[in-house]
Length: 124
View 1 (cartoon, rainbow, N blue to C red):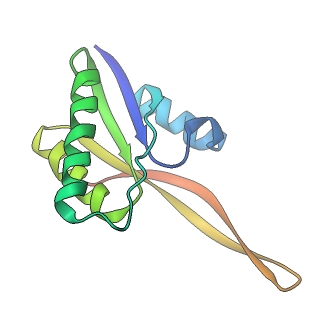
View 2 (cartoon, helix red, strand yellow):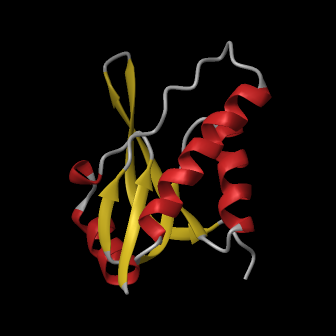
């Protein structure tokens, strides 16, 4: 079985730092990006749950022939609901952690994020 990391975030893997790409491929296999859905703030929880079920179906389709880990970060309600669905199916779900450094340029503050590691949502 092929190891695959499904990246369901607003951050395509092509824009990741080399350290993040290396750690991802070394630990979780080939990276496949699945665009994070646009979750309107107008939706209620049941509508967000329907989108989460749709994404569960996408993950399970890829999982049929592969060992899948899901890198999931984004809108909180969707992330929570999809994480619970994935865990209930025995699928590992991870997030990435970063260090934030503030750079001041004149009257602007710019946040610069540097990848540190992946962390599992499951308490192992």
